[in-house]
Amino acid sequence: MSDELVASIKATVGPKGWIADRSGMARFLQEERGLFRGAAQLVVQPGTVGELSEVVRLCHAAGQPIVPQGGNTGLCGGGVPNETGREIVVSLARLNRVRGIDPLNYTITVEAGCILSAIQSAAEAADRLFPLSLAAEGSCQIGGNLSTNAGGIQVLRYGNARDLVLGLEVVLPDGRVWDGLRSLRKDNTGYDLKQLFVGAEGTLGIISAAVLKLFPRPRAVETALAAVRGPQAAIELLARCRAGSGDCVTAFELLPRIGIEFVLRHMPGSVDPFATPQPWQVLIDFSSGESGGAVRNALETILERALEEGLVLDAVVASSAQQAKQLWKLREAMSESQKHEGGSIKHDVSVPVSRVAEFIEAASRAVHAEMPDLRIVAFGHVGDGNVHYNLSQPVGADKAAFLSHWGKFNRIVHDIVVSMGGSISAEHGIGQLKRDELAHYKAPLELELMRKVKAALDPRGIMNPGKVI
Ligand SMILES: Cc1cc2nc3c(=O)[nH]c(=O)nc-3n(C[C@H](O)[C@H](O)[C@H](O)COP(=O)(O)OP(=O)(O)OC[C@H]3O[C@@H](n4cnc5c(N)ncnc54)[C@H](O)[C@@H]3O)c2cc1C
Image 1: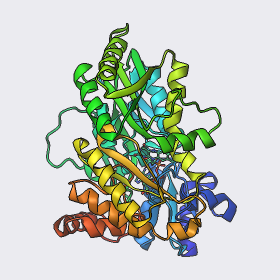
Image 2: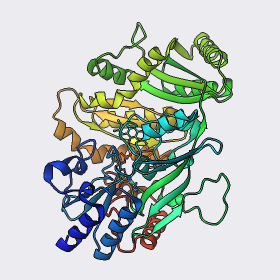
Image 3: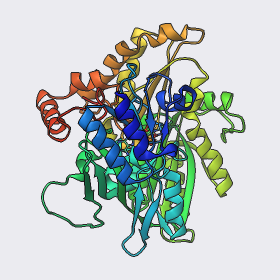
Image 4: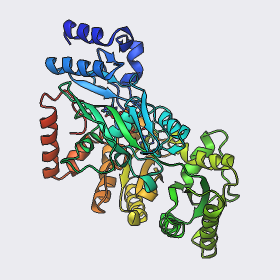
């Protein structure tokens, strides 16, 4: 970067808007899992959309590459710069105002740097629900959620981030601001431009604000943990839960025995409610706009019948919000607990819901044939067909040696996923981690179209280069 460009950027954002010292920048340069560590000359934190637009304009004129960053909780290395030190990080953290809430229109307008949990709270204060929910919600930002098209635990009922956005404001790669902040449920006026930026992982522009959909706040939420023989039984139970409750299922998460054991071993205060260890468990949330016992009755009736028929082996329905929280802890701690068991090779994949069990069985056969004593932790949002198919290293193995097999296991698992019409990235995105996998599996025509879109919007290639494509 030229001294002149650095000086112009600093002057644009003022003293609160930039960080240039090593220790101050450190947390912006390494991603969550520690797989990618980058370097930068500057981290810029604009305080207004005007400042953001001017910073991007200056970078565009100088051909300066930019890495947009939200809460830096992404799991694919999309939000961190490369190792050259030639890129700058543009953090949205200071653009964090709720611009307005319209309870009658069921919408909220927020800036990109708003923390997800703050948006949930603002909606709740207006007696509304913003349903996007994931374990990183206390630190991820809505701009990051939209840029990764985040999923989480309530997709089954409310959809991905993509389904929750009505309008966007975006700073384009040349610094101009596109005002697409519409709050309409119906708008058929040509191409749906906002959806180009959703899931683009910062490669097409910087989202600066969004209009989001709100929903009625549920009056009753019931949580249950059911033990099942295996993933096929879980999927059959899901179908019954949906049909028998008037589609009240808001979350349906699969938990394998080994994952529960990891949580019990490493996460203080976690409790397995079943007296005897169960092979697989599913965590289920039903929610309804009606208070009273109807939704609980539905859940209990479905589980009782499934128990009688042997589809469910045991079940507990939470008797209090506290107990529900305790049950959810088993799920929420599942990723974190794997860190304590050494190296873990991750796959965030999806297949049609009806083929989840077939996928887990085929993939498990294949990876065990390659390394019989690795430990498979297949868990997650099976209600959406999304399995976090993680492979923990064999007990006592060398972590680095195990992780050196990452590419080989990716190929084995992703080949099976693709053969079943599935996706190699269900909800986390591509970033740097899966860029080569994307190139391997996407049809040439799709890649060509993606490259054309990128070239049309960002002809100088300054927006998050080296990510996605
Ligand atoms: C414990 C844990 C649990 C998680 N659970 C889930 C889950 O259930 N479902 C799920 O989908 N993800 C999950 N994630 C992944 C992560 O939280 C999501 O990808 C989240 O949406 C990222 O948001 P962020 O603000 O941290 O974005 P970042 O990590 O900062 O950035 C992610 C990508 O978006 C780009 N970006 C960020 N902000 C903008 C912007 N304003 N404009 C343009 N581009 C931008 C970045 O360049 C990068 O490519 C989890 C992560 C953790 C650590």
